Length: 128
Image (cartoon, rainbow, N blue to C red; front, side, top):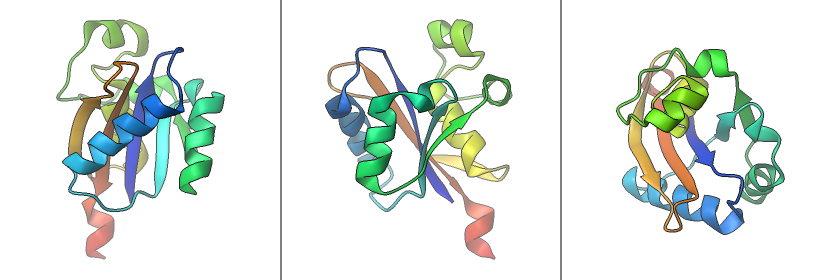
């Protein structure tokens, strides 16, 4: 499974999320994703669901409890204080991709600074 984790501010629009996702996919050398994922409350935001619909993939949410279990390469004190992990997008991608996942594209920031994205892949699934 290959998933894109997203983090975004309330002011983020569809273009913000698309830009962050485009940058993350470039960092992962392209390829398809199986789902978009973010924190559970954010997953209900219209802009997140709109992007998932446009891409034809599920828009998933993960609990803050699960996010707090992830140690991420990127460390933001603001995100640590709010979500209990260093990077929302990295942690969400890792949680959703499964226990054998690793980041294939670490956190990138959209040009307008309103969204972040990272991509994780579960390599154990691809070997079976």
